[in-house]
Image (cartoon, rainbow, N blue to C red; front, side, top):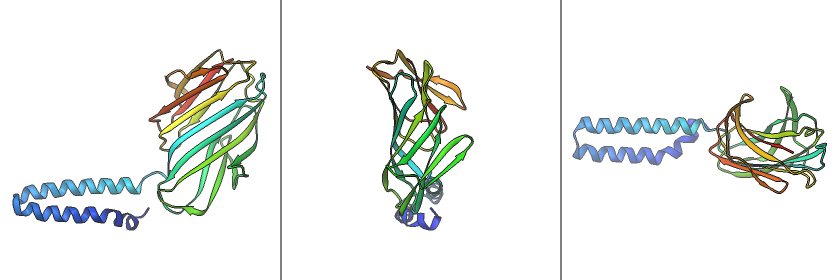
Length: 229
C-alpha cells in the first residue's frame, strides 16, 4: 500500500489531532502542547510505518491433516486447510511453499484444481493459486491444498512439519495412522534451521490419531509433530 492509499485512513486521526491541539492551546502552556503534539506525531508515524509494511497475508488458521493409509507407510495423503486475510489490495497470487517429503509427491491440487504454476526451489516444491479478480484489502479467503505421498513414512520414527512463513494465529497438526498400527507415543518440538529449540506440549493421542494445536506462532519456526509406531 502506498502512502497515498494510507492517507484517507489517517485523515480522521489528523483532524482529531489538530482539533485537540487547538483546544489544548487554550487551556495549557505552549511547551506542554508542543510535547503532546510531538508524541501524537510519533505515534502516527509508527502507525503509518506498520500499515505500509504489513505482510501480504495474515493466516487466521492453518490445519494440516496427514492420513497414512497402510501399515508400511507407503501410501499417504496430506490436506492443508487454510483461512487467510489479504492485507493489501490487488493481490493476484498465493504461493504454497515447503512442499517436500522423503518419498515422491504426486497429484498436487489447490481447491481440487491443478495449480496455476509449479516450481522447484532448494529441493522443495512450490505451487501457486491465481485470484481473478484480485483480492480486496481485508478479504478473507479459504484454500485447500492436497497431495499424495508415496514411500514417505517407512520408518518406525516419523513426523510432519509446518514452517511458519508469515503472521499466523493458529496451527493444527493431525495425523491419522492405520488401525492396525497405532502410535506408541507422540512428541512436538519447535525447531529453527533443523535444530530443536524447545519441546512443546505433547499431542493428544486418540486411538490411531494424533492431534496438536498451538497459537502465537514464531515466524520462521518449524513446528514438528513426531511419533513412534
